[in-house]
Length: 344
Image (tube, rainbow, N blue to C red; front, side, top):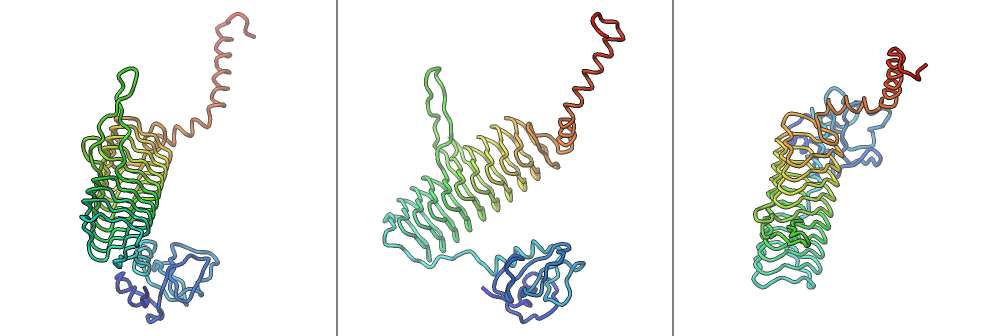
């Protein structure tokens, strides 16, 4: 897609300076300038030249002179919005590869693409404009909304329900059995895994992420949430709206994460944790089973604790060798003052 600078500024609701008729066709980084490319500037950019770019989105207090500029109080956000218009997600055109297998009773809406060796099982319903990439498997009775994109190798187990405009990246597996077993003292018996998974509208799931079905209920990811690559979400987990979860996080069963939470990479959750809305949990934190993480704070560490506490403890951990030496010295001095035999 392409827009003039004036058109982009109007869609963003921002003022601009320079050549409003200049056509912008793409976004780019600082390493690859182009006369029709868009970049953004937050704060000073040192000696980087802006002259080779078609337009810069920048805040009014640091706008460069002599170049085309769209003024924005939040340049990175407006850059992302503009990028979505310049590089829209692919749209279905109604193509069906001859190697795809589609059950006769499956209901596919208008302009649904089905790629090579994709499989659509009986009872499936797919909304208009959805794209199924190569090797995608959509299990029995799955329901997909409009405008979804399932990249190659995605697997939906039977009964999964997906809203509209959902993006599943390559290798994501949605609806596999949860890890639930009961021991009789000698062997393990599989606990029923007969629930479902619901992904609400505008969810995006990263490559090779796995989301288990509920054991008896539903595993749910709320509207607008974004989940990175290589995340494991166990059975009966409930993730709220507009939650962000970074890579390699593991979430144990029946955990509840509130709306607008932010979870860093490699965070581990025990089972039955409750994270209240708006919480931020830093990378590599560990949340013990059953813990409630209260809203309004930033948390870090193992076990997870408020960031201020974590920083104070971390500072103390760094001084442990010196503190040990001081303690040994004090013990010797106390022993000397008490006249303990054998002390100098």
